[in-house]
Image (cartoon, rainbow, N blue to C red):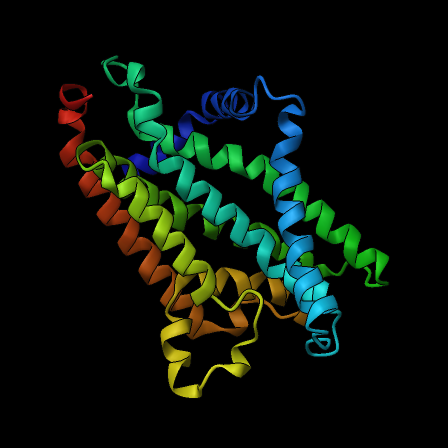
Length: 264
């Protein structure tokens, strides 16, 4: 079942990319700065956190790395994950006119939103690499594994979005619930604080969070220079959760898909 859904995505890559481009442009169409808002908002948020914690609270370097580099290495993947989940949740409702077309594969709508967010994510990866260069840290071979973590992020978000985008059609409150959970997720994931300050008895709870795996993976890539296979238990935990979410998402989507047109 999951394989069939993934196969549809692979076979329709060109169509999905074109839809994603249109969605990306349409999202900011009509505003004075246009698509620049896609980059301005996350950049401002990063600068605010940097100012508050490094300038205001005078946060010390973390593991001998400038705080701003340590911070953006985690915030940039978080932006991608949160934006993807939030926008993909309403992807079917936003394109309800396509649901009634028998030949259209509705299951690809969430992935178009994810790809749209991915365009912005690529920009910020370049932005992050530039920041590291400014601070005197040259690229390393470890940067190659960023592709692995991007793929892992897409798989996780895709499974979640199949669940939320299906349920929100029948329960409108799901959109608000997702928004609240995303806020909780930000504070429960060690993005602007180190896991070392958390009591050790809670480390297990934080580490089973699949987003922790992605966030730490980006830091391992850009800061600590570790390969993902150096954390076998975390990797196994992440993929077990991700495949479970994908399977559940596929099941829910397949069960509810015949009723989409009636409700919409």
